Image (cartoon, rainbow over all chains, first blue to last red; front, side, top):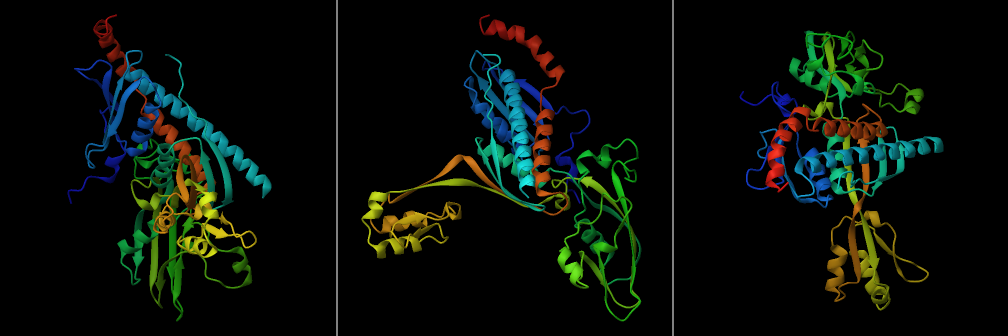
Amino acid sequence: MNAPDRYERFVVPEGTKKVSYERDTKIINAASFTIEREDHTVGNILRMQLHRDENVLFAGYKLPHPLQYKIIVRIHTASQSSPMQAYNQAINDLDKELDTLKSAFEAELAMHSRDY
Amino acid sequence: MEGMSYQRFPKVKIRELKDDYAKFELRDTDSSVANALRRVMIAEVPTVAIDLVEIEVNSSVLNDEFIAHRLGLIPLTSDNAMSMRFSRDCDACDGDGQCEYCSVEFHLNAKCRTDQTLDVTSKDLISADHRVTPVDFGDPAAYDSGDQQRGIIIVKLRRGQELRLRAIARKGIGKDHAKWSPAATVTFMYEPEIHINEEMMGNLTLEEKKAWVESSPTRVFDIDPNTGQVVVVDREAYTYDDEVLKKAEAMGKPGLVEIYAKEDSFIFTVESTGAIKASQLVLNAIEVLKQKLDAVRLSEDTVEADDQFGELGAHMRGG
């Protein structure tokens, strides 16, 4: 009937940016990143990784509505850093963490198949 | 502060590994990563499943869409799904999915000619690509020993009934439809840390100890028959039900035992549908999560647009 198509949940519509950035008008070093077609999977790992950064004063994400397939990540940093820098840093660190995880899992897998 | 890294170095230990089952420990990371992995395994690791069915003849008792739905739910071997294309962004075809990059064709042709009921199973599905076939759950031992029924039953036919169809399998993810999910179950639990206050425990009578040990719905504790001491036999059997803590309180011995959930230590249980191996499911999930992170990186023009703004920002910050 009038249900949205299932692919709406993960296909970024043409002409829409995956990530858009908006500076806060009142607070220096605060900004919101709107990420299209993502959910708690990415939102929560980003938030938790941002919390590890000492220059980040605030980091949070929200899923505004279950039928609006986007998340908003808000970051407020100290003056030494910037939201964009913190955001990039968080992604890079998570990416490296997953590389470590992957090789750790592969090493274990090799060990395990040898024991078989 | 440029170049500062807050990266973690997670550790993995595999405890048990079978084709469709894996149990492993994940340490030195936090619950957000563990949960992201779980979510990705369930909903975002791609597999191949039947998506389009053209029925030529169907005189079975099940209607066309019922059969089409059942066909969709049959797990297909999807080892090459990661390198396949989604039919919606396949350039080689018009997206109706009949090319080698994004789809696999199946045929099914069955007619019952005897008085005995004919079981149409996933074994009757003939694939055009040997890499994508219905998964084989059969126990090889049972197969050798007799005429055991194998494969997944699609429909049963009586004399004279016929089913003839063509099906197209496509790559997809569980977020789109659960038939594409390679995961049967994926769970993780926090590793518990159990501290028994030996001094308080030593002051209990054997009866009291027994009553306390019995209060746990799962067998976490036991009494050593030789020393009469309460020991932890299986801390992972603890379901965070708090029953032993309540019991200790009721006995007037609060603090008899302390139980914490370690916040950086997880025990994963992964069961696969058979579409891909459990170990591959974990590896693919890591890869998919990496791709997702890569997709949310800021694009060049966003950074540029902000750089122009940045000069003003520098003024605002006081240079």
